[in-house]
Image (cartoon, rainbow, N blue to C red; front, side):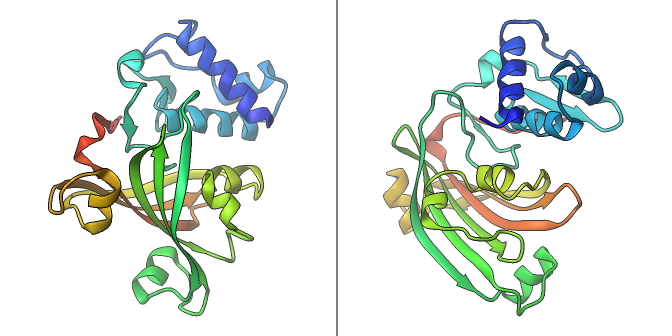
Length: 234
């Protein structure tokens, strides 16, 4: 197991057991790095995992804090504030079905959003994401091949972002996101077991590496039947 995941598990245990209390400021990254005998980069990756899971949040210029209402909101909830797509929680089986996996040239809009040339090839990926065999989201991603190398169907069946972090070594930092109300199409109806035209929550986002490079232009659709959806605003 990568070191940053070991640290994330250790920090999560302290949060769940109350060693770090709700709204409490975590020790700074340098202090945590010394505690776990590792680098600040590794600690940062561990913290980002817990931000993704909805346990932590950051305040610019202040630090990283434990979220409120963790026990209430951390189970059976879709965290749309996460930059990592469908939340993967410990003990929950998350799987994928590939709808589309193509390589093509980007549209003018895609090239502008991803800051690439129209001659730079991109992956065009569409997947249904299942949590405990229930369709939780339908995700479409456009990713430049010059950054995201050697994707294959095996990777797509699991977590693309884990591959980007663990195998390619990138740090995923932030996202610009727009959330809109939409209506279910035929694919939504089939996968979510709802009627065409039923309400859908759609998020559109551009995701960035820590150096500010955009690498993922994505759309994610959620059914109204999915239960609570939480977006943290800090």
